[in-house]
Each structure stands twice: as C-alpha cells, then as structure tokens.
Length: 491
Length: 129
Image (tube, rainbow over all chains, first blue to last red):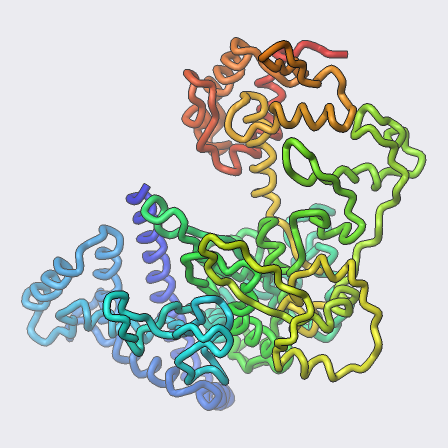
C-alpha cells in the first residue's frame, strides 16, 4: 500500500513540475509576442506590473535567468529545462536526496567549462521555488477555537481557551516559542486563478461554459443545472461576463498515514472550477487544493474557523474582483468568482451547513417535520416518511403491512430557502470548540451563549427587523455557517 | 441552500450494505435486532423471531440465501469478465471460500448495483408471491 501511495505522489509531483515548466514557457512566449506587438500592449504590461507586487518582478528576472542556455553552445537545453528534467528523474524514481546531490556534483564536471548547472539540491530547490505559488502557514489553536491571524496574530495563547500556541517540551514543560502546535496551510486562490488566465490555452478553456451550453437535453456539465441558471437570473451582470468563474467546494476526511496512524484525519478542502469543459474540469490538475486542515482529529463543526481565509478571498473575488491579465484576448479585466455549491458526504454536509444529520431531526430537507422513530432493539433512529411525497390518493399510502404498519396521510413539507435559514440563524451565537475529551461526557452546549463573537454582534445590529424565531427549528442547527458570509449564499 | 451530497459515495454505501445483507456478513442490516424491531412495530409477521426453548430462530427472509446459493452467487461474480475499462477485476475482491466481497471501489459497486446484481442473482430466490 505504501509503495502505491508513493507512486501516486511522485506522479503528482511530475505533473506539477511539468505544469510549472509549461506555465513558465507560456509566460515567456507571451512576453516575446508582446514585445513585437508594440505600444498599447506594453502599456498593459506596465499596468499589470504595477498591480502585481515585487514577487512578479522577481519572477520575470528569474525567468530570464532560466532561459540562458546550459552552456554557450548548447542547443537543446536551457538552464530551466535541464534542471526540471533532472528533477523529474529524481521524483519519478524516488532518488534519495543524497544521491541526487552527488549526481549534481558530478554532472557539471562532464559539461563544458562555463555551464550554469547548479551543484546541489538546495540550489535547485531554491531556483524552482520562484516558479511555485507558495502557501501561507496560519497557526491555529489546538482546540479549534481560532486562527492566529489578524487581531490574534501576535498572541501566544488562545484568547478563548488559553491553550498555548506553541509546543511544549513534555519532559521539562518548557515552551518552545516559535514552534506552533497546529498549522493550517492555505494555498491562496487568487494568484492561482490569475495565473490560469496567463496561459492562452487555459484562458480559452475558461470561457467554455459561455458558448458551449448543451442543447441535447442531457446533463453533461453543471452549466445546464438549475442552480447555475438561477444564479444567472439573479445576477445578470455577473453572468454576462464570460470570464467570471464558478467554483465548487468539496471536503472530506483523509488519512495520510494509512496503517501507521489510523486515527489521524486531516481535511483537505478542494475547489473545482466549473468554467472548464467537462473533460477538463474534473481532471486532477484542475482541481485546486485550497486548504489543508491538519489533524489529528477532524475539525467537525469548527470547520468554519479554518474556512475563514478562503471565504475572505471568495468575498473579495465577489465584491471587488481582481485585475487580471488575460492571455487569450491580451487585455486586462476584473476577475470575479462565485461559489456555486458544496459537495460532500453526509456527515461533512452537517459540518458545512451546520445542521444536524443524525437523531430525531436528521433529515436536512424535512427539517423539524422529520418523521422519525426510535428502533428499540437496533438502537437507532429511522426515518419512515418516504410516502409523504406520493400523490394524495396513491394506493401505497394506505398499504399498512407493506410498510411500517401505518397509513400515511402527511404531506411533504416545503424546503426551507436559504433566506429563511439565514433569518432563523440571525442571532445564533457561534461557539466553536473541539476539546479532546478524556473519558468524561461532553457538556451540552447551550444555543444562546453569553460569550459572543464581536463580528457576529456587529452584523446583527445592522438590521433591527423583528424576526420570530422558531425554537424548534433552531434546535436543529449547530451553527450559523460561515458560508452565509458570502453575499450570494442566501439566494 | 446549495449543499450537495456525494452521490458516488452514497451509492457505494448502499450497494455494499445490500451485498453484505445478501451474504450475511460485515455490515448486514438483517439480524436479531432488526427482526425484534419488526415484532415491536407489529409488521411482517412471517419474519418475527421465534424462540424455541433456549434458542431463537430467525425465519428465512425472501432475501436470505442458503450456503449453496451464496456459493453460486460468489462464483458467478468470481467468473465475471468485463470488457476493457468497464470495471476493475471484480474477481479479485471476491473470496470463494468464506463467501465474502471486499475491497471493491465505488465504481465497481456502481456497476454491480446497476447491471451485475440482477444477473448474478437470477434464479437464486424462490418466487415468494
């Protein structure tokens, strides 16, 4: 099993490196064509360079450096291509760092004198680093209360549970300052989305959904789905621009150590780009890993804490947008993006939506009207209300012995809309915790807790409209999902 | 509320519980407690557990297979050969000796539920009604 996993990771690496290399190549081509085209485009470039930070300048400088030939009379290899092909061999065959280092030391001696090959793995990695997008490390509270960012950035202890941010030495009890207990890895989405538009082919593919709506009446791509159309109707100005992105969010538990630590569960959060054609949009290279929520236990209901950086970026992409250069039309535009939906299994559905998925009111669709009863011997809740959806005079409704011994006369309840849910949960105080329980039973958390989030209370005071809150309905919810912070989520 | 469920995952779970109920192993949904609940609810009288002295007997249900039938069922799946790219080698997940099915992927369960199960079970159930 371990070897299989290793293989897959090296494959992934390979693809990634190839992609990086490709991206760099395209970028270069694009620059070259730009030089030929004359004034207005150069202006454009200046505009981008202005908007982009210093990193992008670094990138350009490194790219120039990368394109120098391996040695003056070399025809086949540039510095970059030589290094990338060597690095590919390393990852493909799982070469040890040491052996690769030695190979790197010997190779330059075989080449002509003034070659530019690096002589150590460290240099190679440093060289390649400028081409990857990087990620942010965000320290988190061990008990999932908060992330140490923004106003908490400088703290040494969690403001709510007082747990130390740093690791402690178990023998001496000494706090190792600077070594965090839990680190959330956030792969910023904005620069990645922007870079997608930098390659001409990809930029073209990203408009696929606009012109290729299927007319055969078969669902081959989410572009024909109800949600998509509904959002288009609701936000026509968003829908009118073909380059605006639609994303899907998906998450599930994943154990990276398989048999070595079976209890460990980290939660990757993936984004799917639905602008792409159906054959590309589910390819692994187009599915973006955006967050890596660390273990050892799953975030559960507190997943909102970890989703925060991602949601902030999504809000920014919706409200303001980002100025992006498009390689296909060779112009700049404002990139906007929308999160269409989430995809998950049923327990994760509960975590993301914040509703209960087990117990009496286990059905998120029927809500408080869920018909359920307790099976005494199998010791579980069962939900036997399927026949509610039948026509009022359907003969199955009166069949008692075929089903659970009762005739069904109920009607299917209306599904709550996002707006209603949001209204219901308006005053809900989110209280995240994920304390490791040691033997004792978890205390029941009361819905209305005096400890309030300052952010929440500020959003409450905006509207003074009196809303009658159904307590029974409220008992079904565990939190006001962070997804409601997205302005379009209620629709 | 745009929260969607992972249908492939759900389908896999459903298919695997159907198969294990048929073979009476693993995550079987049929058992003493399930039968007791039927009695408690007062439905399906023919399936209620009947206790005779020390022992409690579970009457055979329409879906229960005898040992021989289980063998036939497993053998049919074991001998199944699909076209290239249709599904993984299902016979690898079938163990003939203890009549168990394990280690299938969600796509295999999809194929099993959609197409193979009716064929594999043909003639094994006595017609009940």
